[in-house]
Each structure stands twice: as C-alpha cells, then as structure tokens.
Length: 269
Image (cartoon, rainbow, N blue to C red; front, top):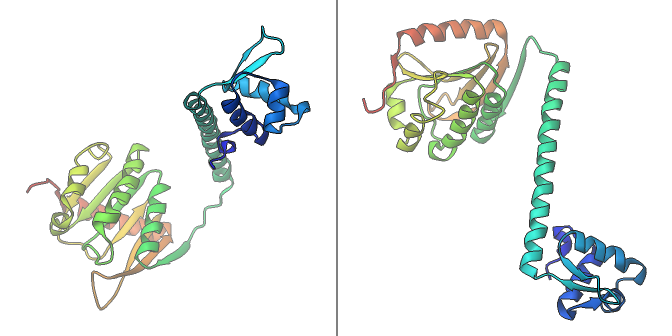
C-alpha cells in the first residue's frame, strides 16, 4: 500500500485520514477508536489534518464531527504543499551554494603549476566539461579530427550545453577547426550553433587547415591536451589538464595568429 507519509503525513495522520474515508462524519473519539490513534493525540492529529485541508469539521454538532475531503482533492493539496516546500528548499540550497562558492573562492590558493590527467574517453570528456563549467573569461578550442571513441551525436549536446552556459555567463568561446571536421558534425548540432545563445558575439567558429591535434585554452592560464594513440590519430587515450601561465600564454599567442589567418565558418558553404 502506498504510504501517505511519503507526502508529508505522520503515521497517525495517515491512519486517521484513511479511517475517515470509510466512516463519514464522525466524532474525534469514535475516530480514535476506529483508527487506533491514541485519544490523547486525536485532536492534535485532526487539527493538523484540517490545517492541511484534508479534513472538514462541523463545529455546531455536539460532539463536533469530522469528515475527510475527497482523495483527489486531498492528494492535490498534499502534492502542492510538498512542491512549495521543495521549491523553497531548492532556493535555499541555491543561495547557500552561491555563498559557499564566494567563500571558498576567496580561500582558494592558485597554484603556479598543476597537472592532472583523465584516462579514457568518458573520463576525459567529463574533465573537459568540468573545466568549461568553471571558465570565467575564455574558452578557446582547437581540434583537427573527430575521435573514433567520442560519440558526437551522444556527447556533442553535452558539450554544447556547457558551452551555452559559458556564453550566457559572458565567457568568450572560440573554435578553430578544419573545414572538413565541421562538415562531419551531425546537422542537428550545426543547426544548434546558429541559434541562441551561439548567435552572440561571444561565440565564433573559424576554419583552417593548419592545426594538428587538439587542445583547449581556459581563462588564459589553463590548458587541456588530448592524448592521442600514436598508432591511430583518431583514437584518444585521455586528457591532460595543465595550469601553467607561461605555457598557456605561448600557445594562446599562436592560437591568435592562426585565428587571424583563418576563415569564418559559414554553414552551407
């Protein structure tokens, strides 16, 4: 049997309401006997049920009589109450999260150099999405081939979701790829980057034939390199995440040079 306690009722309230459904108008003492709710608790239980809108009372009768509202009305009211409480709890968590981010960011120590790795396509993709999610200023992407193990149709929307969130935060997103790679992307993903928020000035795609391998620049100080199987160019073994400002600045300068010499991507050409 489904338990009404899942919708916020106590055990006594559950038993009292179920008993009322079968009894019709009844006094508190008769309900206590029928539901096996202790007589010392029955009035508090009925008060709570009436406050929740699950019970109506007829105060002019002696003794006072109580009647259960119809189940469809009662359940709707319980669900509405639970929904409001959950939304309030979500709002509280979001406010708490913002405060914690501010507090913890103020305490964070930025390492001059740091390196971490993710092995395998799934872990590499999750690491990349994580770094995109924390970008504040810039994400610059270079890729020369679609990897065999990265399912563009399946994971491509995840990447675009993270890039869209970044763009809406005001992060500049730039993609530099060969024209043939763009042509190999499923049409649905190409269509998406022509719509909001990818039509904003913060997003741009350019094509060139002079890039080799793949890396991602994040906020001018962080790099993500794909580790490629030396025996198979399209087989990615993992991802290396490096925080090294000097190395990043050097590669960023090269990125901008190639960017200026590249062609803006125009779908359909």
